[in-house]
Image: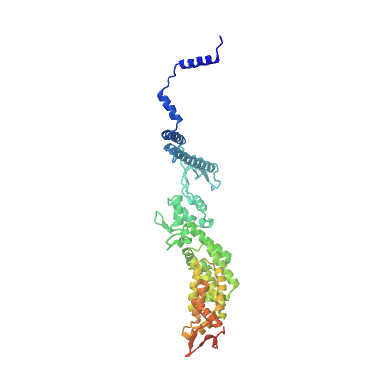
Length: 469
């Protein structure tokens, strides 16, 4: 039977109505509703969850939860890494030292004197005397016999020798020449025979004036007689090597320049050492004296004589080589001499070179020296400066006679010169020169004020002296 559309629809509706209803959990529905409708509480909870996950990631990365500082674990890891680095460096240095020691051990010295040999003991090669024929040393078959003469006390193989040749080799190794050592062989051998070991024998030889042997005999050290005495009276004694190198260096300079023996006298040597005059500095002094003698500048000699540094031109070498004058003082004296010489060269231009000016020259030269100028630089500055002073001196004296004489304030030539020198070399502007120049400018422009001269009033520009400069 056919079913009409209306009937089919009606039956469908009836079936729907007849179907059982679904069961819904109220709490689940509420949760679903909450998820579908965001709230402030839900958002904050979500943010807290993210923060917790970020903190976990920081800790995993070796940081504190806030991500600002390393954790204790990561800090310890850094310390461990630094410690491992240092240990690695120490081990590397130890390996390098071991390799170096091995290299020394594999290269036995070849300079053993006749009758001696080297043996490796511990960490160094030691020099030993060869055993006599038929003696093995250390066995039950016998023992070595005592030596005599310049060889000192000898012993069997394996026992260090006390040969003077070994002591001489040690001193040569310290840099002392064979001539000094060989001439001291008797003294050195006496020290060994008296029971001193090598090290103590070296100390006695280099650093003591004399030595008293066990039998009461007093021996004088040859080294002290030639070099060590130079330490007498010094607050800070020099080492034996310093004294030796200085004296031998001075001697070489005498050969180089041919200067007088008086510059190497006992007193001169003591003063050179006392004043810390090195070989290089004495070399420069001797060369400066040589050049001064070649140039033969009479003005320079005159300046040194005026300053009291020498008494005559023939003493020029003494000026440079004087052992009583230290480096700093000689530098100042040389600069002062160069300064005064340039003033003397311009004495014809009116510059005064008298006692008052000499005192001023010394102050000016000292100021330039303190600034680090050399002798040549001081001479150049003085040449230019005194030329400027000479050119300004006469006009300034004339202006002072015009504008200051009328009021009883005229300056002397020496005063004006000193002011001009201070302006030139010390950058101290001369108030007098500035005032006189301004007055002279006003006089030429007709702006000079009225003044009273000999009881009359008049214009400076109208006087006989007006505008004469």
